[in-house]
Length: 145
Image 1 (spheres, rainbow, N blue to C red):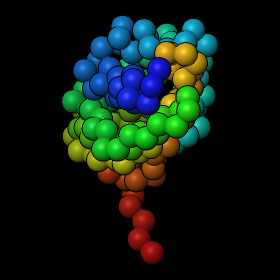
Image 2 (cartoon, one colour):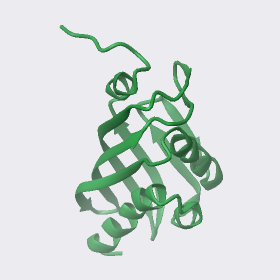
Image 3 (cartoon, rainbow, N blue to C red):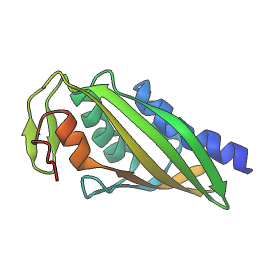
């Protein structure tokens, strides 16, 4: 695959999540795909388990979506810059427990490094500021220096 094709496929991760097209998302993953969610310290293997984790985010913020603001390809790797937005309108289970819906809107910048094996996604390393996210939804108090 050329750089343009790799970038397009990597963007399908964000599109699949945003539109809740879980079948399309599963179809671009290798059978042993790894999702490394740095913000929560979760490492998840396999398309079904990865989709289940992403569905948890979607249940916590049913209107959540991502916007890819930049994309770069080199070799078999694509880096995406993403802005995630959504309203916390469902229970959110994170690394510090479950938080009831707050009704608060969040905007969280992120980066995702996507590694390919052929034309399928082999690894996703998702970097985002969990502290800022939790503050925005009211799960933890904002700290000021």
